[in-house]
Length: 220
Image (tube, rainbow, N blue to C red):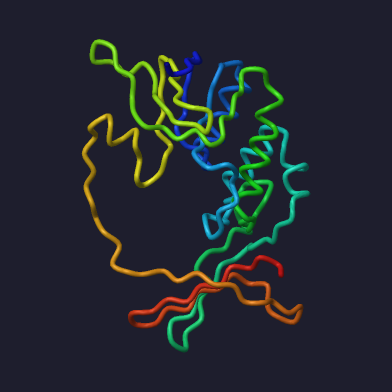
């Protein structure tokens, strides 16, 4: 027999969308369970960019000062080079926000920060190593999810289920939602380079026919 839990909202996936939604709902006094299939958030080369709109939200939540104490670098501008032509592609210094830059921060730090603040609310529940396997339906309505955990199968009953489980979403598949595949005609190779203190701070992209090279400043 699967263990059964009950909550008002069940969120499949503990990425930025799932964790932020879980935190905001718990902050509003709504019981929420976030299911993350991994045991931690330590997966490299995800989205390292915290945009000015997200930073403004952190300010509105009263968390910006604490958030900016986490290790990060800033990109007030983004530059690009096309052959011999160098351009400023984006300039955030004119935005009507408190932070006029993109903050570059490993995604696991961002997610751990949200998880830590979410746990301050009694209605917030984060279940790690809980992989959603299917939907529970009753009379044509989704009423929860099934999941597998190291301790056995789990059933979570919830009047609202939100799929934040990424490009290979189980929630989307089980809900029989059709996907239009547009394709991405490129391969991406991620790798690390050491960064001496004499290197420039800019986040830079170099665009050549058939090739793009992007540098993301992670401080070290």
